[in-house]
Length: 110
Image (cartoon, rainbow, N blue to C red; front, top):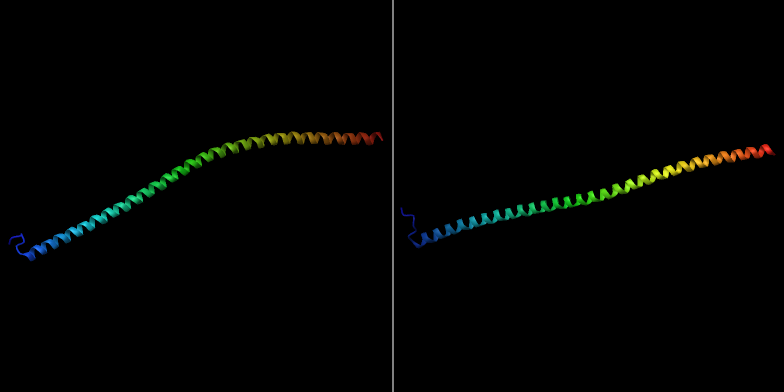
């Protein structure tokens, strides 16, 4: 049997069959390209999210450094104020003793 179509009906059947195969192949290629496009878009979106997270981490690290310096300065200031407070408390205690001595001297002289 000769595989080459001989009659117009065979030619039409061959063309329709070939067209169907081409159409199915084309649909499969479109699906693959579409799936690749979706995968590429998903990959790009994930890459964008990762980059945003890196940028945010860098920003937060910078802010953390600034906050650490600010907290360090506050701790130094608190230590200075505690020292001043101690000096003032000793001064107040000394003045109270002096006032008590003066009251005692004043009562003794009356």
